[in-house]
Each structure stands twice: as C-alpha cells, then as structure tokens.
Image 1 (spheres, rainbow, N blue to C red):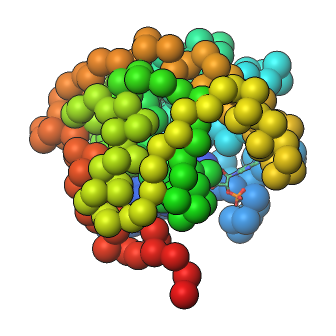
Image 2: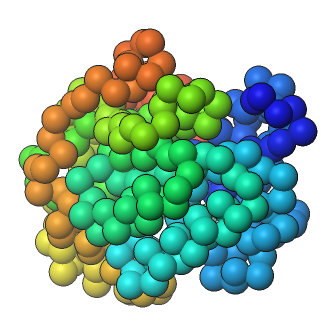
Length: 278
Ligand SMILES: NC(=O)c1ccc[n+]([C@@H]2O[C@H](COP(=O)([O-])OP(=O)(O)OC[C@H]3O[C@@H](n4cnc5c(N)ncnc54)[C@H](OP(=O)(O)O)[C@@H]3O)[C@@H](O)[C@H]2O)c1
C-alpha cells in the first residue's frame, strides 16, 4: 500500500474467502480490518448506520455480499454502500460475484458505477462448500443428495480466490478487470463426491434428486426460507451447463495454475473434518 496509515477492509472477514483474504493480507504485513456482524466495530449489510465506522481510513474494500444477491434490495444496498465508500475516501473495490449468475449483474453494475477503481471476481462453485458450508453435513451423513445431473462444474479452491482478491486489492494492474475464476478441471457433482470418497477414504455417495425433493428436504430441516430460495435458484437455474468450461484467469493473475480439486480433498482430509465424531 502506498499510504501505510490506510487499512484494507475485508467484508465477510470471518467467511470462507474473507478469512483467507484477511490472513493473506496480514501475512504481507498490511493493515487489515474485518467487516461483519461479529467484528469490532460490527458491520451489518442490513444496518447502514454500521457502515461509516468500518469505512474510516480505508483504502480498499473486499466486498462480499452475504445476503441473497437475487433479493430486490441487493443492488440498492450495494450501490448505497459503494457511495458511502467513495465519500469516505476509499479508492478501490474488489467484488466477489458468481460466474454465469445473471442475478448478480445489477450488483456488479453498481460496483462499476461507483466511480472507484474496481475489480470483479466471478467465482464458480467453491470446493470448500463440501467442508466449510452446507454440504459438509451431507458428506458426514454418507450421502450428498442434490438436484443436479451430469453437468460439469469447474470447482474452485477458495484459497485461489483469496489470493486473486489480495492481488486485486493491492496491485493497480487489476483495476477495471472482470475475472472468471475457475478450477483447472470440470467435474460433475457425482465425480466430486466420488473423489472425496476415494482420496479421503470417506464412505459417501452421490444421489441425484429432484428440485422439489431438495427444497422439501431443506424446509423439513427448517432451513431459513431465504436460503431455500437461493439454493433453488442455484440448482434450478445456474447449473444448466453455462459454466461448463475452465478459464485461465487464476493463472493469469497468480502466475501458476489453479489448484486441482484432488489437492483440496487431500488437504481437507488431513484436517479430519470429514471424520465421523466418535
Ligand atoms: N459458495 C459458492 O460456491 C459461491 C460461488 C460463487 C460466489 N459465491 C458468493 O460468495 C459470497 C459468500 O462469500 P463467502 O463464502 O466467503 O462467505 P461465507 O463463508 O458465506 O460467510 C459469510 C460472511 O458474511 C458475514 N455476514 C453474514 N451476514 C451478514 C450481514 N447481514 N452483514 C454483514 N456481514 C454478514 C459473515 O460473518 P458474521 O456472521 O460475523 O456476520 C461471514 O463473514 C456470496 O456472495 C456468494 O454469492 C459463493
């Protein structure tokens, strides 16, 4: 950073990507501030009065919008936050978006129109959904049942997303770029689960179910309606093959290929997160 007194704000700093962005920036000796409901000061997308304190003395922001990007309020909220960031003297926004996600386009547009330097990271499905998010319990239960067929998805390791985000937050060269971040290989969900079973030695199998069965199952588990709607959108619309290709954007930014899914599985198996509790 040119101005050593300024800090980098990482929204979603306790989440899958944000936590790693925080760690990577700190490891580079940079000043970092986390922004989420549990940070101090707290940041809540739903409460604009919490925005000004976290934006104080900030040069760049990693923007993770944690709520449903398909919600009608998402774009206005992001536009309003970007406006406040500009007024507070922020110079650069790095926005985590979804690849092929038409619902996220208006949110991206709000970032581009902020008048600040911007980089958009359109990520494909995270490897870590199997270990740090809603699919971890399914792996532990022995069955990953999802409403998705033989569609190839270029699963990406969030470690790579975090490294790209760090580059975009700290290097001018990435301003004005949209990166499509994918892993190096297409896998169907069935193949991904098979690799977890084989490489990690976990007794888990994949079952294809209907979207109706999937949403009914989530509702039976009293999953919040917001998440059920988002999951239905992701599986009902996004996984139609539109993202069945890999890009070289991770390698372009980092100068090395994206991490393979098998590397993620090996590393995650070593943490024992997929071992049943005895
Ligand atoms: N999962 C995927 O495969 C995938 C693929 C492409 C794009 N994405 C995008 O990735 C984003 C999620 O990023 P992630 O996976 O790194 O995060 P995450 O692991 O889902 O964690 C969510 C983060 O947001 C914070 N948060 C939740 N509600 C909040 C609120 N109301 N106000 C402020 N902060 C809040 C949480 O911290 P607190 O609890 O402390 O508030 C946490 O730090 C979403 O926009 C999603 O669309 C995901």
